[in-house]
Image (cartoon, rainbow, N blue to C red; front, side, top):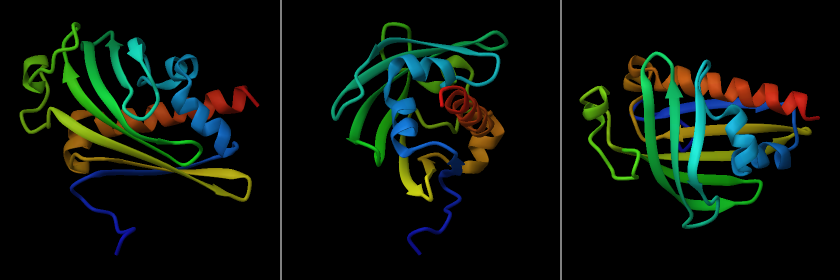
Length: 163
């Protein structure tokens, strides 16, 4: 039952033709994150990022169509080459949490979600599982789910270029 897909959370599984070290580095190196961690047509900046247990971040994804989306969060667990767990909280430019509806998000969207990324090595490739504590249906409706797919695809491209 542990690996069953729950509809009350986002669940995405991707396999990358790259070492587990390279995939982990793509998630933890700010220079690499800036190259893939935004949906297609968008850019990301980090006002602050400390990828370590208890580390905090403050980021902004700029979308030419919808404007800026600021986010803050904390890294709850960072286990090299294995697992990254972090919170995502909608925020303003100054890093203050805000109600997602203030920036035009769905009224059912939680102001705080937890993202868990686990990595496992399989025959020289890396299997990534991503979970986010928001319903997959809502994430599909709001665009968050396709955004994750685009971002992971961008990461796949980055990893191929940096072999």
